[in-house]
Image (cartoon, rainbow, N blue to C red; front, side, top):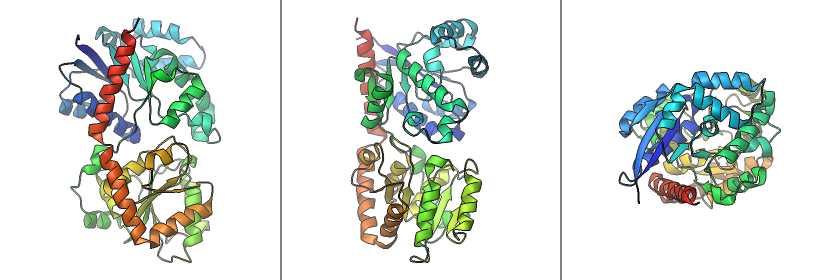
Amino acid sequence: MRKRKLGLFFDTEPSDGGKFQYCLSILNAFRALPRDQFGKVVACGSNGWRYHLSEAGIDSIFVNLRRWQWFYNRIWKNALLPEQTWRVIVSRLSGDARNMIRQQCDLWLFPSETNLSYQLPVPALVTIFDLMHRYEPRFPEVMAYGRGRRRDRHYRNACRWSEAVLVDSEVGKNQVIESYSLDPAKIHVLPYIPPNYLFNQSSNKNDAAKKYKLPTKFIFYPAQFWQHKNHKNLLKAVGQLKNEIVDIKLVLVGSKKGEYQSILRLVESLGLKEHVVFLGYVPNDNMSVIYRCARALVMPTFFGATNIPPLEAFATGCPVAVSNIYAMPEQVGDAAILFNPHSVNDIANAIRRLWIDDELCANLFRKGFERSKAWGQRQFDQRVLEIVSAVLSNKDRP
């Protein structure tokens, strides 16, 4: 069997959060692919990757495609040219794009959402993170200012032009089939794993508690303040409990964006100033120890199909309660409490159980940790090898 050449393209930034961490997981899996079977090259469009690529010891090329992206986005608003035309334009006008094409890779992996995955005339394996613009269109973060239309066109093109796509779950797979009529054989399930930085224990609980002035006991929710993260129902649930559980505390992590100001007003109106702690942005290196300090993660999100924070909690021994939506039950199994994110009472009941029941928390800790050990970087690496091999085999068929 001849040696195949694989390419990997990144243009995410460390500030992209979960997507950047997902790309790091893909990079680790890419690095683990057998050298006797695959030649490898990485193209990156962000300086944020230089350190990680030097550590990985993989041949890399830096491509500055920002100008092309700017040109495309500006022209796209005024001229809806077919993607076949764009594929010709980019290959002729961009020297960096031609450099990638000259690599003559049998397959390029695009783990971040970029229109280059279908504008470059190369065989592509593309990640689709979620289709919430179709399934939760009431939220402005996926629909306002033409975002929904742009997202839909992006995913439709990704499905049309790629050799195959990656999704996080069987629910995610079914949503792609339902939305874009893609051949199921071209859709490969690759569940998320917790990011490697969680296993950095250079900080201890006491240091973190002092640095961030953490309460002795608290519920934790790390999420940006977008509407779909559902902070408001979580705060209303805490408001219901504050007289019953007088020492109830909620710690929130996230930049001061989105609905942050309205969340502050809600905290004031519910009389929760003594019960809610805002930590703002927390560097990755400190997240692990905050999970370890927390009584539990409570995640009332409206978005799926799956999410990374429950995996982070499992890996750090933090009990979990999550929304009973999409593929979340499939993701957490019996290792978490499930609740209806639309119901303040349901969220409050989940928090109450976690706060008062030590035996329940110990049981969730054990089950979550076992689940984390059963699906980690090693299993992820093996699954990526299986998917790449299957895509190449299908591509070789006449």
